[in-house]
Length: 319
Ligand code: F6P
View (cartoon, rainbow, N blue to C red):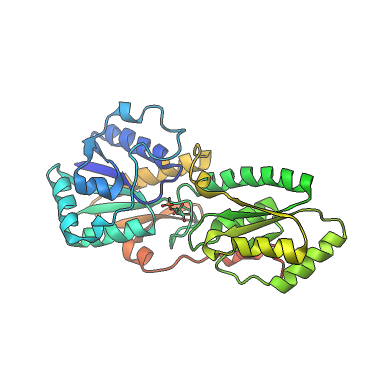
């Protein structure tokens, strides 16, 4: 049996360790691994090749993905999905491991209902916005990249008595921002899931400033679109000179942490084992209370991820 691996959507650290394990594990089992390059775009265009050990030598520490990724508009069109299926069928590939997020799983769900394909989805996104899983591949590295940046920003903020507004990624999800606020002790945390209480926050900050606070670190999730409003408020209402840092794609890069390497390895072994099992139905792997489990694809794509109330409770919000 031949299995292929593909990355789809935003790249994330941990993809390369997963890709390496995929190749090593399939050869260990006497099977043939294939790479699909450039995600769904490459699947449509037939950018598929047998993988060998040499392809994955020396990649475990590298961020991003050696087989690249994409977001494909063409895959919405049934005619291109037919092309994609032909490319798999002609090579005898009937099992696929997909490293991707919500949108990629949705696309695979449609595809696997049209054609007799088996696939396992591995939740991979720095946003941590996939229903059913406590964490996704790439999240731990992104959090550590953010922590490093925030520690540095705090150094300059405190030295220069300034407020800093740092905008973090996550699309509509505030996970990265909440965890970063908790672990970096930010004074303000603005996320799409919780309304910000301007009045209470102002009173709180003014009280602290009266007692000697000379700098402020405010984290804003990109999904709120409130970065410049918060900066104006800090400057004009709170009365502190303010700078904005948009961390941007720095958050998606970097050498995967030990946790992300381990998670990538474990996810792949579970995915391959499932594709070789008698059941072989389409599933998404999830992590629940440190255990890897399988979830029905329909469950994952038809529900919305919600932030854990316990995590929100840890946030020392200013209201
Ligand atoms: O989904 C990952 C992510 O980095 C989001 O946090 C961000 O909103 C988006 O992708 C950015 O997309 P692009 O790389 O296409 O600019």
